[in-house]
Image 1 (cartoon, rainbow, N blue to C red):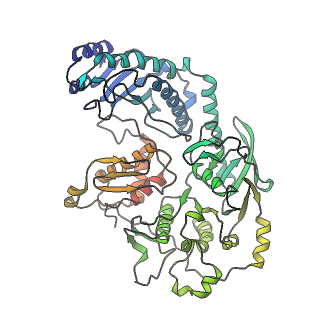
Image 2: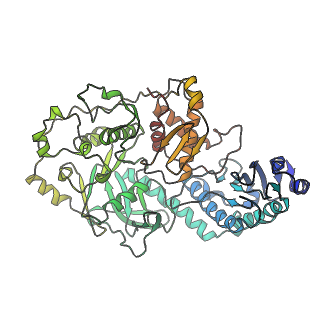
Image 3: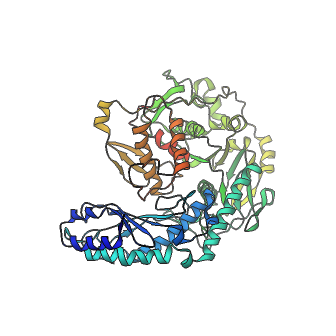
Length: 570
């Protein structure tokens, strides 16, 4: 390892040389309070900026270890420090001048959810080293090195950022404590869901509406949430103390109400409740079963050898629905496949909005059953399977309904949203159901779908044409070689960096697990377990770990593997 003084001398020696000479700076440099690692140098000032890492030992940062002992408090701690570091580094971005991306200083931007990111890591168990990974645009005039401007970044700007955001003695200890206590309280509520047999909890006083379709910030002056008395649960949190709110029981819950009364707003809050939220978000005490999956129809998605026979059988063309494949799924077949794939991903809760579902997958009303006999209809609707999904597979459902009254007959709990206020109308609905009985039905016996789909990459000849660089197009779409993976309808992906991780994991699975023997559920479980146990170090054994990755859930890893068109899943 070299000393910071060596780096200063190198900068002086390469000043005004051609830009590629910057690559000679790669390596480790001791700055006293921290180690600076120049991991990757951009090819020119207009290319993606250089990768830089700072490592601060425990003896310098001195953050108490009690703040990051559990996985939940560790993630919250890292998120808190990353937001502080980002606010500092932003002040200096482009303060050093030059061409193209010269002087850029950037690090991962955090949203309302608290996610585990490679941009900030506290190394535990172990030596407690605090690590920040970020990007720097190495300055140039044209394509000529401007070393004096880079010296300003490395010797003036970065030390100031470390001093004001990365050390315990300069941090806001009250906010740090509040972050820790919120993380412990959120974890406690999530643990209580299981003990109380709840699918979700929504605290009184929560603010569920968002500012707009493009802003995830809480809406100002909106109606705060208040639980109906019949569903109110009071918890005693480790730090906040007593907290009351609506406990949604496991089973089948129906959310109904007029248009614009808050049905979808409540479901959206439950959908994001699989993640912890920062203080002030309004949804920090909205906690949903961590395995919950939002289901919807996805016209046109690829489906490879999925056993959808639980919902679709006896097709007129005699196609086998126990190994159903299509490159252009209909609304009903795509939703059936998504449901089965979520079962394989060990989801214990389905979240469904009737508005984004295939109608013929969800329900067949009494009149339609009279016109079209059961033997002529290959679809067993979700209406007829929801009860068995709970009773025999342990999977609850929370369903937003606005058109069909048939769902009332299967609901264990019915919540009416009235001007954003929830009202428990279960007893009233049960009485009305006696006056409007459903037609008798006799669906095929319930059978758990098989999960034997093998993940196999194309043959070498095909791979030579298809394999290539991973390119991320947006939060929802990336390509690997010439094949595009569309995750637009995997609605619980909340961050661009989660998609970056999914793209990387798909490429890793191709390189390491495509042996023609392992199933998709097996590979997804292996990838997720490696992330949980060793972070990204197991995937980057012979290289630096870059910033720009955020941890997805097991359910999203399944969704990504299942939506890749190029792999020969058989």
